[in-house]
Amino acid sequence: MGRQSCCYKQKLRKGLWSPEEDEKLIRHITKYGHGCWSSVPKQAGLERCGKSCRLRWINYLRPDLKRGTFSKQEESLIIELHAVLGNRWSQIASRLPGRTDNEIKNFWNSCVKKKLRQSGIDPNTHKPLAEMEDKTSNSGDLKAPATTLEKTKHSVHKPASSSSSSGESRTWKNSVTPTKGFFHDHESSSACHLSPLPQSGFAPDCAPLFEMNQELNCSTISTVLLSVPSGNISALMSLKPNIDLFRDEIDGIQCSSDVYLSNSRRSSMNTGSVIELQSSTSFDGGILPFSELTPEKNAHVQLEREHEDLKWSEYLQGTITASATIQSQSHPLQYDIKTESQSVLVGLGTWQQNQQGQQQLQSSNIYGKDFHMVSVGFGQV
DNA sequence: AATTAAATCAACCGCAAATAT
DNA sequence: AATATTTGCGGTTGATTTAAT
Image 1: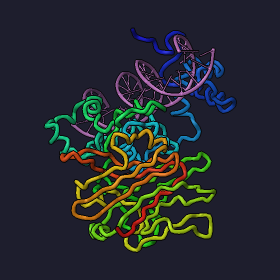
Image 2: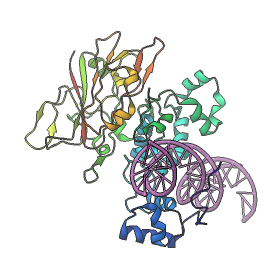
Image 3: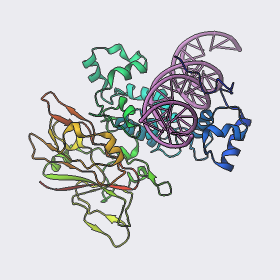
Image 4: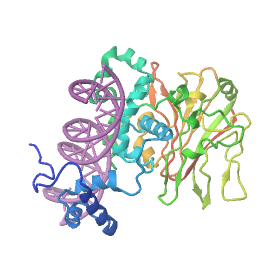
């Protein structure tokens, strides 16, 4: 039994908004706020449904919209976020100030998807296209409608049990494997991702990606991928990295928004109000992806909790602490990943079973929201 | 210059969750 | 507790703009 649209029964206007309608809506909302959207059109003297008014305001009239073309950094961030969040446009948009979910969705569908494909990356899985073709033996798939691709390819990373709260469950249908390599391998990368490791102890190049908006109590995601020269990887073998996420405000102490890499644990509080990390001489300048830290693709990963227990919805809500250990065959490496505090989103990457039935960490993008500091520490194994 | 194809983007639709009654 | 209404989201459509022939 079909349902009529909300505009139908009252013969409400549809289609593009006229400047007069825009003006009415702006005037009403700036004066009274939107309150209950369903009552807005009547109060504002508009022959539209509340839904249409809401959409128009959110996507077009809101004063804090940035508009204009997406910057390289924004594009990078969108790809990174899509790799972890999938098609959850509203969540992606919440980390890009001034951008709407609709705008990002359009940008993705019309532009980014194509770019990724041209770069040999499947925009849905964020894996190399060749890999997908090998599995599907269907190289002509690229011309297939997006809906077909999405419906057929991505039930793999759905969490073991869907969350019953906060609308997370339905959005997992397109959860994907984080993109690895795109920014390492392609010259279109933003400077942040490809910049050589700076000599200083901190990572100034990455700092701008950690835009803080204290009034709104949110920040954009920090993008933490950084390419590492292979020589450095071998040097890392004797070190034990620890990744911790700290609340940006701990007992009232304001932390910096920079991303640090250190060979020590959080070492000291400096004299001011900013927590500083003691930097390492060899590995300054950023957070390393686990793909770089893991010398073998099939390094064994042990999770403190059973894989089935790990729920992305819990990560999103920041309600759990989880840790994982990667044990490499040839190197005595152990990586501890821990998330702490509430309202922190940590993309541990996607856990997948390899052919030996072992859980395998595919990527390790780390994302923080609200005021958090991300640090990586190395210590001797 | 005219036509066609591709790209872009605003807005709609239906569904599900959240909230109100 | 059950039902109705509202809100928010993602997928999709279709009009418009831009590029290619």
